[in-house]
Image (cartoon, rainbow, N blue to C red; front, side, top):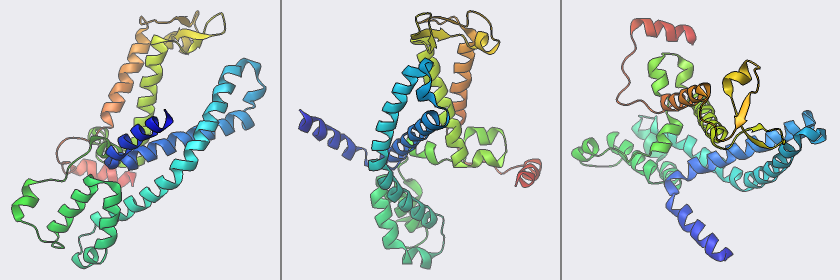
Amino acid sequence: MLSTIFSSFNRWWDGQKDRHFFLLGTISFFSFTMVMWAIVFLIFLGGAQDPDLKDLTTWTWVGLVIGFTALIFAGPIFIEYHTQWTLLMEILQSTSKPELTRQRKEAEEAAKLLGSVWTARLKKHFIEHGVIRGRKYEVESKSAPEDIIINWWRTNDSRFSRTFPIQLLREPWFNRSLLFIGLTTVILQLYNMAWGLAKSENGVRENTLHIWEYLNDSQPGSYAAPYFDDMSGWALLLMSVILLWLTTPAAGIRPEPSIAEKSWIDEEE
């Protein structure tokens, strides 16, 4: 039974080679988050001594065990992938033929580890700068294969940054933070509406939290789940979906900023 499960997982994992970097990064991030939450909750907040937080304490311990175990296995591998990705990104940003030629072997090994998306992108970059030979029409007509998740994760040209010309919005780490906030809010609100996040009179989390009443400290504040009549909850869900959409890569080539936008960006820097 276990051998069948492991065999199926290995086949699936091998088929996701182009997404290994993203998957390892996601696992490492959530594992680190669970471990840090457990440390803060159990040590600094003293949650384990609060009887009203018994259910949360149990899940925190479960998250600590799962997060720590996953971090031991995924963390070192992710660091290796991130090191190779950093090296490859530096090479892809270089336009010096001698420098590219000198680092060609290292770049090809890094691209091979990261997957076919990066191998094709590196080959295209080498052809464009004369490191390897290639037919002109092949470079112009064939772009490197793109991956939606990879592009979303690494973009510095989101729809948000197109709408508001603020330099911070072009930082990949900040865009990922907004993506995480939007996705987490969507998941929690959908769960809240369908199964409930608030406690009922029985002390069980089976009531849908009414967002507007909660913010205004009004009664009753929650209703038996499922509950879909909370307009403020729908508004929160809609805003979270819009936030997610704004973090996606913008279409087309980024237009040159106007004089006013350049001044704004210079002031931000």
